[in-house]
Image (tube, rainbow, N blue to C red):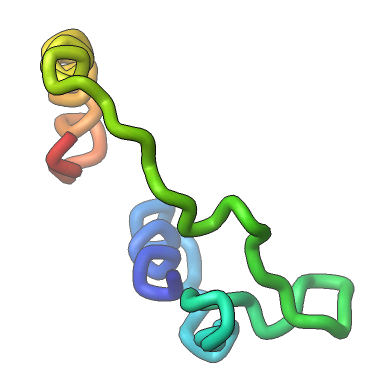
Length: 86
């Protein structure tokens, strides 16, 4: 998460204040968590819905959604200067 947050901070022109030191890998959950939530002395991990399986979506539905959002995504890529591959 720190790498992505770093890119967001750069994009917004903000000083990088969030880094790897703010996260640890939780072996039990299998993903990174915040070492300490702001205003709390305890670590913070996302809940049970993190990492859940995604539902199967019909290929035709995905094609229709991609076709519909393609022009909006292209405009967004132009605005941000980054192609997210959506």
